[in-house]
Structure formats: structure tokens, C-alpha cells
Length: 136
Image (cartoon, rainbow, N blue to C red; front, top):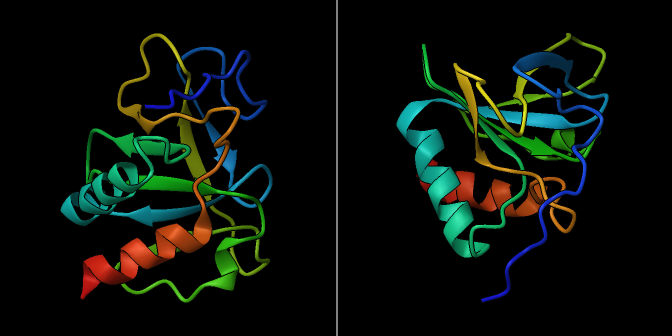
């Protein structure tokens, strides 16, 4: 098994402590998927990538959304099926995503999968394939 090297330092958009809101479309785009469907997609993606999927943020309250963080300006290239929602800086609206620190207390947010040097983002095409197969 090839273990990935964790980040020596956090990306600039990850807060040092707690959690913070970050503007989607600046440092990353995001795809939001709620509840069981989001967990199912995350599990499939992580199993396929040997648990090196790139950054996935999970909410512990409310709809229990998962946010799959993609490279900036990539989410709009795909037609995301309902009930998923792409969040990016597309000019039509602004969206913010809660980002937890890599360590310490971050409730109600946590990392389902952390960013690594090799996988700083979720691969958009792969995520799109798993979303399409999960909503069928």
C-alpha cells in the first residue's frame, strides 16, 4: 500500500484553529452533497482512490452535507445531477464553505478526507462519475 505524505503545512485556505468560512471559487470550487448520498459518494470515491480522495469536508449538524473540494474554476465544466450542487465563483451567486482546521476542535465540521501534497483537491471527473452512478 502506498501511503501518501501528509501536508507539511496547511494550504492557505485551511485555518490554523477551529473553522472558518472560505469563498468558493477563490481557492477551490466545491460540490455539496447532502446526507446519506454524500456519505455513499465519499465512501465509493475513497475506496476507489485507496483512501486518498483529496479534501472532503463533513458537517455534523443539519443536513449533514459533505463538501468535495475541487480545483478552482472546474465545477462548472460538469452537469451535476440533483440533488448535488456545485459552488464556485461563477458570477451568478456567491457561496461560502466552512473549512475546519487540520487539528484540534472543529465541531461541527471535520475532514472526511484531508488534502495531501499529492491530492490537494478531489478529481472533478472522477467525482462526477461517482455522483452519476450513485443517483441512478
